[in-house]
Length: 474
Ligand code: UD1
Ligand code: MG
Image 1 (tube, rainbow, N blue to C red):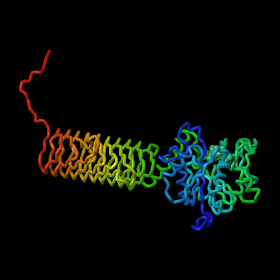
Image 2: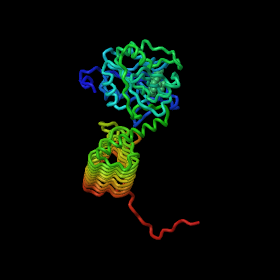
Image 3: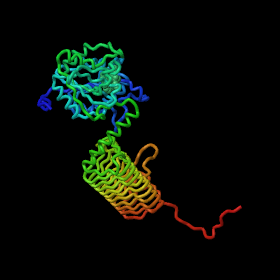
Image 4: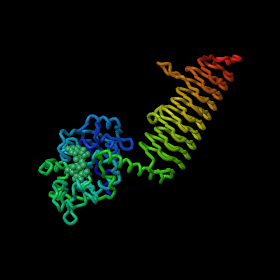
């Protein structure tokens, strides 16, 4: 890399993202660039890569589905850079697309041209491309393909790049060239603007090709450099659901390797899906078919069993999440996030919903649902239960089949179960109510009033037996 590009005073980077195309082959109502890869829209990946380059300005060229694309990107605005949009109607080619950005592009930057449907380009690759441009050259990202069909070919005389020739305009000899243009370039803004003004559509497709500027650079004596890479994933575009699934796997594979390099034990790196960010402390192990969404953190020694889905949750050291557990926390940092305390045991078949906050050594067993409820240290609900809008004290034991009835049809009410309470099986605690500390509630009780501490409370029909009862008979 040149000294210049490492310098904080180096030429500013302005990113242009082409995202006006229709994406017919996705066969979807959703604009192509809004299809999701690892839980994020394709074009969002590209915008996030631009952020990683410390771009000054990011301009997205929209056309098909423009309103939707702009709304989706606006919803994730970060403020780290200027995010703007220009519309391209109709779509007359990549050169015409970039022409639309001329009024908003400043003259002193390096413009990096990216595509909204090429999600996996890495920031360090683009840094190298920017360094190759160095504020004065036209730098093209290229790659060798055994089958270059469909791509623009890099035409060289001796070593020097002369032009990019599109598939439909290429001679038989040029069709044999295997080095192709990736669709990504870095170019000084002022020159780009001059060249864009000269693009014509006198070619086989009658389109304005951005790639025509290479010949203009050569004619103007501006050096053209090709930065050739070998990792095809980084330049692969999404045109159909098959390619989308392929890139999803490539992304997940890359992420699984990163996690294993940090020491995470994955039962099978091919059976992990992370749609967001997963932070793991030391000695975490994850069994097969787990899905992590949003922001999830797993503390030291956490074990996650097979087939768990975990969204927006922080799970403290030593907790065990048994198979088939579903944890669905709300927005990261909000009261709806889910917390699982140190050494807690969750599942199998448990469901933790938004606002479930479990202290250390809490046990939540099979078919137990917890929503907007806090359970203090050592509390247990091991079988078939519902704890919604509840505050549960330390060491409480909540019996099988018992529930908090939190909803009266209009409003939600809270149930408070103080420390050391024992709730029997099949109880209904009709909120609002408080079960006093150390109390016991007999199985089958339906409670509508507060109970005093340390008492046994039973609220059910008394058991009677009628001797020698004769069953009706015909
Ligand atoms: C382009 C390049 C080709 C390169 C290939 C790499 C040109 C003329 N050719 O070809 O050299 O090998 O990419 O994939 O640039 N778009 C718009 N508006 C338009 C046309 C396209 O926004 O009017 C967007 C598309 O949505 C897409 C990107 O630009 O994101 C590239 O367009 P595409 O039609 O795929 O270009 P290719 O013909 O494949
Ligand atoms: Mg294409």
